[in-house]
Length: 270
Ligand SMILES: [Zn+2]
Image 1 (cartoon, rainbow, N blue to C red):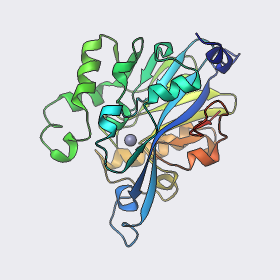
Image 2: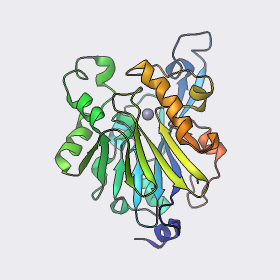
Image 3: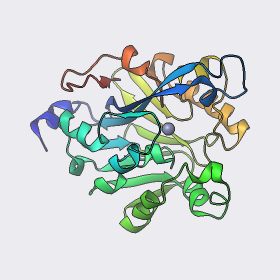
Image 4: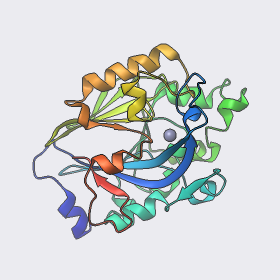
């Protein structure tokens, strides 16, 4: 453990400190993020890409695994700030320090560096795993491109995959919550922090505006569960200010920058 990691740890058992690390930015369009074509669909809509680091007095958890360098070059318009592993390194956390990798879902921009986490137990909802490894996901081009088979192969072969089904307290003060909607087994992560319960919504709410306008993103598995997820996010967070959407650049403005990261792309959530 580095001195820096020791300094990140909270003192109270069952409490977490949480950071959002942005590893990429892209000039998206509103139509990519809000279902239902309208006159604003062609407008630019800046999009951020994150992993989230959560540290307790005993554990280090990485929520989602971003995009790896090899795939990043193939993502149109992506300004890649670096591998999530490099960002963590600059932050003072080594890949081998990560004991848990909670994967909110198995889209390619959330699994990219799983193979670079040598000690992590990977936490995936059973419904998510079954969908992407089952017969249907491969049938449709619209679905197929969203998943990286090499990342799934790593998860399958690692012997370190922990399947969960539904809601589960993974560690004291850290729970996962199956919501589906965006994908078959999308899960939220809830963390007890000094500021209250934080909810990492990931792509259950890509942007704050998905929640405030009650408007889903177009990539979705089932509509009722998308709305159920919106409600669950709000229920599980102690305050609307403790909800962290998956791709909103506004996260970098709402929360204070962490001085340890010179790129300015890491913020302290709580
Ligand atoms: Zn995503």
